[in-house]
Structure formats: structure tokens, C-alpha cells
Image (cartoon, rainbow, N blue to C red; front, side):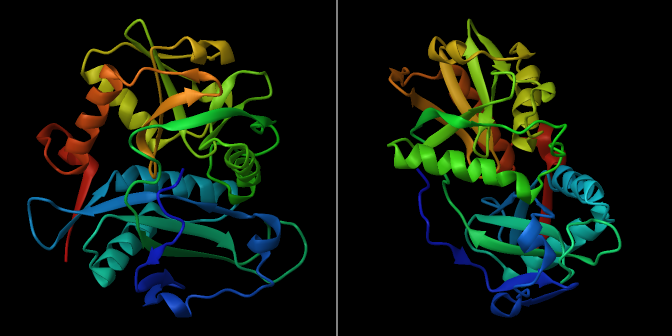
Length: 308
């Protein structure tokens, strides 16, 4: 389960176009997005550079900024990628983090009206930061299949991280934890394996890396895309296709990916336990750690270095 439910918020947030003390960044109880889920968010990680003082490494900031900008477009809101990246750099410099952090950029309808709509409505954008180590245990998690199904793209714009969509994740996660598991696995409306409550899923069979494709109502995860690209560069065959529930039970390895989760192994699904030997996942995780810590020059372009 999550390593800690107590969050250490950093002193400054980005709110209404400037850095302000976290405690003063407040919204009204009548805020439109609070009532209707008319918001979209991102999740990003940044760490102090292990090799250079007063430098913060932000992982794939351009991809995160692009996805949030695209999510905003689904809400009929204009939020440029440069607005996101400039705010990220400002908030990191203001907070001067000494530990790994998680950044939550959030675009939302800030209007105080009561009509459920996206036209003729005020919007805004904020960012806050928390200290974050391991979201899930790096030793592995236990999972169950949820009784809740992932939404369809025909009912919700699943290409964005729309906040209202996460009611399903919340229901599934709570169901899993209250029944003795760490995490939930969701099927889509066609009965195929989709994702976890907030992570993408991969399996390993016969040396191949297999994951549900973007046509399976998954979130287009940035860590997912990174793992696929890394695997291909290491001559690991990657297959994106529908996954049946029973395939997971007979897989050689099963693991989750996400900004918060990074690469986390699944050690048990319901009554099926998996081997603690995970050679392919371990190889990918080590590679990803080296990249995020700035130790792999071939992936330097994935990092944004912010000097404090």
C-alpha cells in the first residue's frame, strides 16, 4: 500500500499566476470543478541531482506539459505548454527542494456558477508540491480485480487526466484495500485488462513485454511510454494488444508503471503468487533509475535541469 498518507507539502504553490505561500492558495467551496469534476491534472517527479549541488532534475517535463495542455483542450481551455513549464521551473526554484518531490499541476474551471458546462466559464491553473519517496512498496504489491470497470472513451475523454474520471479509481482502490489487497486492477467494458487504479500494467511472457494498447481505454501514461521506448532500445520485444484476465495468472512477471509508482512489481494477484525473480522488470527499473538520476547520457534529453 502507499508508503505514507501524511504529505509534507512544500512551502510555495503556483496560484493565479504567481508563487504564493501554500497556505494562502485557496479556492471557494462554490468552485465549479469541485462540484462537477471539470478539471484535469498531471503528476510529475523531480529529484535533487545526485551529482551536482543546487540542481533539480525534472523527468520528461515536456511530455507532461504537452499532456496537460491537451487535457485542458478537452475542457475547452487554452493552457500552453510554455505556461506549464515556466510555472514548474518557478515553483521548483521557490521551494528549493532537498528531497525527491511530486508536483501536481491542475487546470480547472474556477467559476462559481452552478450550471454543468464548459463554455463561457472561467478557468485557472495551479501547482503544488509534496515530498514523495516510494508511493508503492518497491518489493511488490498484492492486487485483486475490481468489481468496477474502466470507463469508455465514448463516455469520458480518456486521453486526458480528467479529474472526474477518478471516481472509478477511488472506488476500485478502496474496494481493494478494504478487502485486504494493496491495489486494484480494472477491466474495460469489453472484459479486457485495462490498468490499475492509477497505473499502467505490463506482463512478461516468454521474454516478451506485453501491455494493453491505447485502444483499450487506458491512460496514455508517460512512464508507460518511457518503459516501452527503453525496452525497444534494449532489443526487448514489446507487444501492445488486448490482455485477457487469465493471462496475468500465467505470466512470468507482472508490474505496474506510473509517475508515482515508478516501476512496481506485482507479487500476487488474488490467490496467485508470482516469483520474486523478475529479471526483465529489474533490468528496466535499473535503467529507468539511471536515466532519472542523470546517469545515462543517451537519455539526457528526457531531463530538465533546473539550477536553484
